[in-house]
Image 1 (cartoon, rainbow, N blue to C red):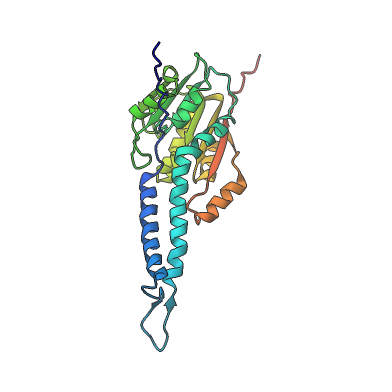
Image 2: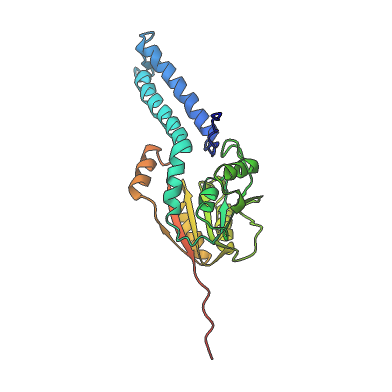
Amino acid sequence: MENRETEAPARPDYGIDAPGVVRNLFIAGGVCLAIAVTVWLRLWSGVLVTPSVAGVQIRFPLGAATSWAALALLAMATWMIWESLVGKIRGREKLLDQISWNGNEEVLDVGCGRGLMLIGAAKRLTSGGLATGVDIWQSEDLSGNRPEAALENAQREGVEDRVRVKTADMRKLPFPNDSFHVVLSSVAIHNIYSVEGRGEAISEIARVLRPGGQALIDDIRHGREYAAAFARSGCEASSTGSRLGSLVLTLVTFGSLRPVTLLARKKAAPRPRSR
C-alpha cells in the first residue's frame, strides 16, 4: 500500500495594509539607520553646526536623532507587517464577537478588500445566510486588492457558497433600502478624503441597514464624525474599542492614527397605532 502525502490546504492571504506606507517607513528608517551607522563608526561627529549669524551658532545632534528615528520608523513598519499578517486575523474575531449572530443574516462588508471581515462573517453564517462584499479595489490601500483575491480566500476558508463580491463605491451602494441585517466596515471609510464623502458613506450604510440591524465600523480615525453621521441617519452608535489602546497608538503616532470601533443600531420603525 502506497503512502501518499496529502497537501495542506492553502492558507488565506489577506494582504499587507497600506503597502506604500510600509515601504516608505522602511526607506526612511533605512536612511536614518545609515546616517546613525556613520556616526557609530566615527566617520563624523554626528553634529550639524550652522554658520555663525551675529555670533550665534546652532548645533544639532543629527546622529542621536537619526538613531531614535530609525528605531521608531523600522519598528512601526515591522508592526504594520505583523498586524497585516497575524494581528488583524485575531482582531477580526474580537470585532465580530460584538455582533449578535443568528446565522441566517444578510451581511454587507463595505470596503471588503481581500475579504478579511467578509469571510470572517461568512464563517458565522449557516446555509441561510449570505455575506456580500463591495470595494473599488484600490491597490494602494491593500496589496493585491482585487475581487478574485477575496473569492480565492473564501474558497480557501471553505465559505465560497456564502460569499459574493461586487464592484461598488461605498458612497452609492447598489442595494435597496433595508437590505442587510449586519453591515461591516474595517479600515476603509477613512480612505475617502472629504468629510462630505465620508458622511455619504455612513448615510448609505444606514440606508441599506434593516431597522434593528447592526453596523460595526472599525477605522483608524474620524470616530466622532462617524458617530454624528449615524445619529443624523437614525442610528444609535456607541464606541466599543479600548480607550487606553487608542490613546497609546494616538500618542505613539503623534495623532496620525486615532483608532475607533463603533457599534451602531438602526432604530426600529415605530409601530402604527391601533384605532
